[in-house]
Length: 556
Image (cartoon, rainbow, N blue to C red):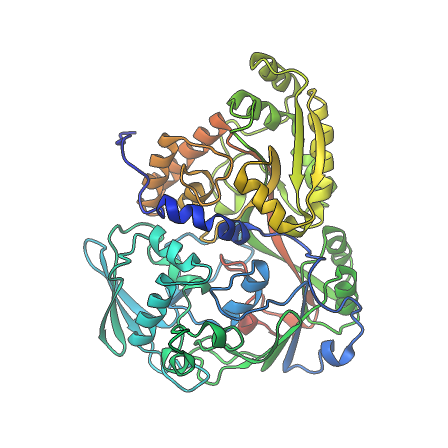
């Protein structure tokens, strides 16, 4: 392949910004399971708050409810589970095929607030036409000025600037991103068009706000109304927030000005019940319609319960064993390969995940739909021992850190299994559970952790974005110290190539390159799971990995 090796990775955020955003990105990539440390009523014994009273109300129970409604106050999964249901985006995803096993690619996007768009021949100007009649709950129709102001707020973010990072990744002109033509027409300016330039507009991070309403609550000290938007919504989604008790409960009502089909459920109650057993009992008693964040043991029991339905969300998150390359001897790829070859991934899937996952034998989650690597990872203890000997490593000791709150309760058993498997090649593992998420993240940032368990879950489900963010030299969550300029260039090539055979071949090259370097140790291809009462139907997955309440309806 002919590449200019002197070329720097295109469209990544500057190094100074990356350093500032490391903690932010770690929060964004954390996709743990049941967060039993969350706030909420553990008892599950408040029928007035939880009972699904009739077919017009959907009752959702979750480990936690977020503390702010502002899309720039990102709080991980609990933000993803709620905000897209009232946030209106310009674009959305084409519906997946029934029983799809592959996530949508970046070109499978569909109209939402934008009813149509036209791309210039050079790809640098995209002219959008907004949908007529799409209104916020305040009765204001979406306008090009709403788009311009919303993008301005994203770029000048004082919160979690994920939208700005995504625009940067999409090659946008951040100096003059939007040109307003008229109330319903605007032009998007893109300096370096690539595969994700438009698909980033599907994420709730780029949701459009009703600027006419929001500006009524702005002040000189708070020109973007952060204080007001923490407790109020002003977007163009299917629902609007009817009441909000931060950390405890949120009630949604249908947005009368929503442009799409009116949701079957007029009201949605989302309530925090931090104990997973209590959530399961509420579902089994029919006092809740949808449950989030159950443990794998609980999911196993759901499979045998005819009153409940288990739904899988395609989500390209890989559980990883990560080593700090700045700590000897982990800078040696032979040592990292030895660790990878010592792992019995099938045992981890069965033991820690109760079968809810798949062995990760290369670097691309099976939900991407790429062919497996020609030489996938398999346990080979003899080869692992030989690699350690070649590297001159004897009596290797390794402290393996993790945080249950960051990754979910299954991580404890994963750590034990990894410890026992590495012992077979003479590696002595000490398990270190760090109770505080902040301390865990700080240890990764300051280099004090030698090895840890982590997940890779890209906000944009695109292979190029995934490689750049997690394995690029300046990658936002590349805290292992890995650098391969050839992989950096290859990631740019993938980003600048539209989906198709050529792009697939480039991804295969990247996969092989990482398998040679072994920057981290892939363990398990994980998924997200949701539990529904038998009386609810209509669930449909999407690459943002959230349940869309507007699609759900009473069975029958």
